[in-house]
Length: 251
Image (cartoon, rainbow, N blue to C red; front, side, top):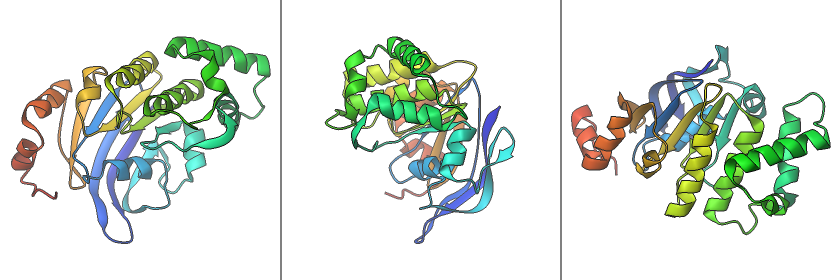
């Protein structure tokens, strides 16, 4: 069971952004995709989820061997791919609990019974140490950065996808919020979930230790390794990777 990116080339109307990305995330693994701003990280995340803003000109996206390259975003979600966005949307008038129930029902043929949903919600809130009052608030309305990310981690727990893509989930978080999100991600780790954490900071990796680290520069993965690669990046910055890979600084 895996998400596999094969020789992926992606462009917008202006230019090609990804130039042949290969990446495979198996269930049970945690991967970190790192790179400076403008390297193509969020382009890859949005392409995985089928954003119409990006055009795949070459390559494939496979989930468990099934080609999802042309699939709509809702098809990808039903197939088992989840994405936590860098900037989650606000939905006034829809409570967190109602949103979660709609999301759960979207993956089912029969609507979930109220009692079953309540039990599932309570179990996951206890797991993630979330107060009951949180789910009665309107989704992301007046939420702090940490609360928005906590809502997405709760959604991840409720939907139980096969693959989770966390796009800059540490962006804008203070240290307390970062620990809350990291604890949630760690609580979800296990043999039934593959996780791709996309970030340009190493700080979340101080709390969530990845099995594999990939460095993306100028639309290409130029180096791969274990958790020690993130530590090396923390010490030396991206310049040493640019020099090793012979990649010009695009900043």
